[in-house]
Length: 292
Image (cartoon, rainbow, N blue to C red; front, side):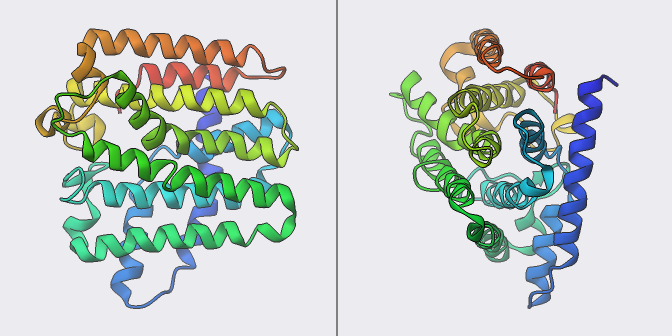
């Protein structure tokens, strides 16, 4: 295990202890609501977003304890989005992380409510930090905007709109990638910058945008050539449902070439940051070569 791989494991373990405390505190009624919330939070994941936030905090001099509520809020939002993505009316997937999707266990209605519950609770967590000052308000606002109608929701809407659309082009694909995925991978990097007083704000935002697009591009590639045992979800669905993807627009080899270009852009952005960026350099390669 490399040093950066060990660091990712360390960040994930640190966050999982925060998440465990949150899960143990869920006591809402009816019980099916509490059970459905816990189910999706407990079925795993690499915790990439909280880990990125802690790594950015180390780079910019922000203590992880100050970042923990924001990391929790982002993971709650991410989990809600996965629950809703899997619904029959969205991406219609019966599995998530190798386990039955939330709606397959608790029903569609309860899955919708579980997602709604996680999103609303995330905003409650963010509001609890706003009394600490203007930077905390700005950090909370950045996450909310990244998740909302000018971010992830817009990207998801465009993703649905352009299914089986013969007129989709690279600009459409870029909008979907940037909003559906990249903005919620940019927020974990920008929040520590905001809380540090704006250190490397532009660089962190630009890196997050390119890294997020790289992440989605490799996800689309894996849907074409991955397998269920590694991914823990159904493969081959993008083509079947007529999704707008880089593989669909440029072919598999063209998509891989664009992934390499994005990875190079990410590395060049890191060159403008004075500090130890080895973890993020490793993370680029990790995403570029990932199989799950």
